Amino acid sequence: MKKYTDSGKKDTRSGFGAGLEELGKKNENVVALCADLTGSLKMDAFKENHPDRFFQVGIAEANMISMAAGMTIGGKIPFTGTFANFSTGRVYDQIRQSVAYSGKNVKICASHAGLTLGEDGATHQILEDLGLMKMLPGMTVINTCDYNQTKAATIAIAEHDGPVYLRFGRPKVANFTPENGTFEIGKAVQLTEGIDVTIVATGHLVWEALQAAEQLEEAGITAEVINIHTIKPLDDEAILNSVKKTGCIVTAEEHNFLGGLGESVARVLAKNHPTPQEFVATKDTFGESGTPEQLMDKYGLNAEAIIKATKKVIERK
Image (tube, rainbow, N blue to C red; front, side, top):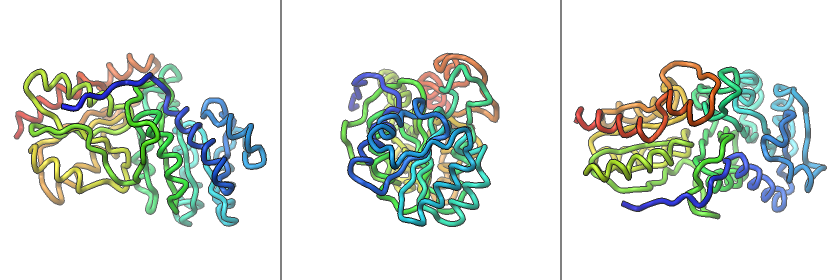
């Protein structure tokens, strides 16, 4: 099995900041709006180098989304930045009416998603945002796994015509995808080959899936690990090709099992190739205050949980 190496832990939000700054240099139509969280979203470099294209709207997220929608009419490509909770739940009506329904070319960029926001607790740890966004017609939904992929995705979505939700996180995590790699919206990335189980993961759980696969191999189980960075449109072909070979699947995500990646995969399987599936996700619950590591362990979002789910689903084949 191919081994992946952590080149040095980095936060995915810094990948967003680096990608945004690169876009600022090469595309004068890219503008950025932030809801009083410039430092947290790593938008400082864009603000400093392109002050005429940066708009600090303050704690007024609904206004930010409406402003961004308006800017697209003049040909601008607006990137909005705030925490995932405030990027979706707080402004859902504005996104639905002014962005999705109208098909506006707004890039909704959301940091501090999921449980790994950590100590700020349940009020800030949104675990339903992927579901909220994927249900909106025409909305592309992306959830990146590390710094390099987040930077690449940020640059790629500027070329995509239409609304995009880009989700990333707060903590420093393993950085293992290729530097300056390409990012193709809607195209899954197969990381390992296996014949016993398919493990489909997204976001921070991709690295955990790779760690699980290494441990499973030691036990004689080969896992095919697939990085699903695009939740919508989902790469149905990659999923189906893999499960037809392995006969079972585990989905892993830092999100509620209701409405997330797992449910989207289950829909594909139910329509095309019914297959035993296990879900590694939060089980219809809110989070609580704690370190990212404590929370991922308590709520079963790590390599150990993926290994347990894998052994269970193999028994169901």
